[in-house]
Length: 92
Image (cartoon, rainbow, N blue to C red; front, side):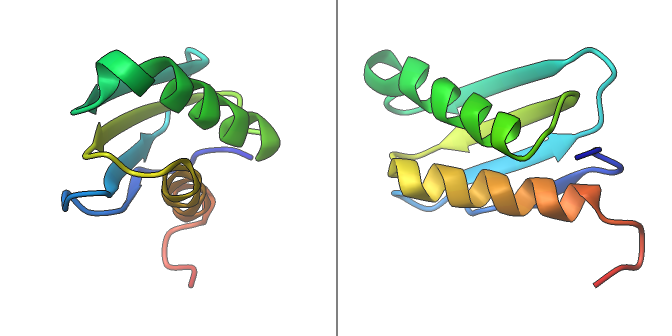
């Protein structure tokens, strides 16, 4: 899946994550800011890499601001942002 434009999903509320996906030509970059990064940062990044691999994304820059989201929420927010970012301008 090709990232054609920037897109975001999520909120900055407690127990949620704001994920922004941007086009990139340098593979996958994940910039994570998390209130639980010390404990779960590696797991969050691994889950994000798995979602990107499952969706066939090879080039993307991901910015994530986490406030204690569950893994299912992280996966859902990233999936939504990627799908929004891969659509043509003006598509539903």
